[in-house]
Length: 512
Ligand SMILES: Cc1cc2nc3c(=O)[nH]c(=O)nc-3n(C[C@H](O)[C@H](O)[C@H](O)COP(=O)(O)OP(=O)(O)OC[C@H]3O[C@@H](n4cnc5c(N)ncnc54)[C@H](O)[C@@H]3O)c2cc1C
Image (cartoon, rainbow, N blue to C red; front, side):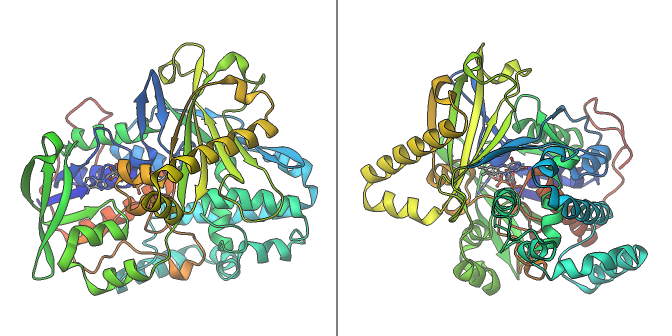
């Protein structure tokens, strides 16, 4: 049995931890906050349970990542479908995304063939990911595994190959859709959220799956998106692992190019310090945060990556309390407002709005709904202004809040009159609560499959997990990454003595 330390109780860290605990290893998860989930966590404030960032849960459909992990670990997910998936408010129309895509095709009839093609490619993508593809491969064994899966699925896979080399915009152009400004804008809005870049940047094959969320079905987790991480944390403990909250990893001790221990701060304001032995470390962190924890021992390649890689997006968010009786009738739970047809998205020009479901009374005081509103933003600008002039930082927060509420009001008249509580957060806030460097969130833009970030760190017994590694962001995405990392760790660790098939708490009994 090996001793495994997982740094961070985000969805990626907890999924890997639960799988490794189930396999019979001694697993401890360190989490600096008092609750799990990180960007997909839910926190209490004045009677509300607000989602910190993520709000839309996908991947619970048969063969979806959460479904597969739940089946393996015996988790009976407390999730409910949310239909329609969301409504997009473009400057000239509103488009509703549903499982059958009916409204999108009705409003853009020429896109029907594109969506057929997208669904075929996405089905192939889901089927490959369900077979546990170690992508990108990091050694010969993984290359062979991919080749084997590829050969097994021939000739279906051949269909995918050309799309691996196209941008999504090139794909749209091939299908005669690039001239349709509104359609391209609609797709750009979806890709910004799911691939962290728009059609000109996003790889076509990746986009096929990223655009599949509504078709596969979206879900609300009971009690907020943090419910997913809470169930994963329960599973870690049920399989004999430990989750320690208010325990911050302060550094990783390395000897002879292997990690041998993690130094942990805990107690009141981190007043206590403990050295925890580790045979293997899984870092649910960005490469920058891992580099910090390694200090002088950071491998040259990781150090270089943190010095040369372009920063990813951050988020500006509003947490709103709203009066339910002031909302329009039959109001969907999720909306995207794209306020301009041209120009770069982000910085309030694309806004995602999610309301707690009406049926979940635990989320808000009676007669109210908890709302999370987010827009992509450049992280550096917030840190620069904070450093230069804290008053200007506060003014910029107020300006973003006003712009967002104005843009929402224009698309959804009457919304502002429902708002009874407003709280704003910037990348500075995200860094504080999630420990993510500069408050960068959502991983890296998925521009090329050939540049995908693997879990490798340059230290043989440390792996990254979370949205910095392929396939990147979303609770479903980091779950796929975590499944791959857990398998990789198991290959490197001594075989544990078999874990009893019955978990400690009354989860459904499953065979590891
Ligand atoms: C605004 C916003 C909206 C989003 N919307 C969606 C959505 O609708 N649907 C969706 O699926 N995804 C969405 N995402 C993306 C999704 O939330 C993330 O991709 C995913 O949750 C990231 O998981 P992770 O495993 O990388 O961990 P993270 O969420 O990064 O969590 C890492 C954890 O590690 C802890 N930690 C960090 N440093 C230390 C340390 N030194 N010691 C101990 N603990 C530490 C942190 O406190 C945190 O809990 C959104 C993200 C944001 C920010």
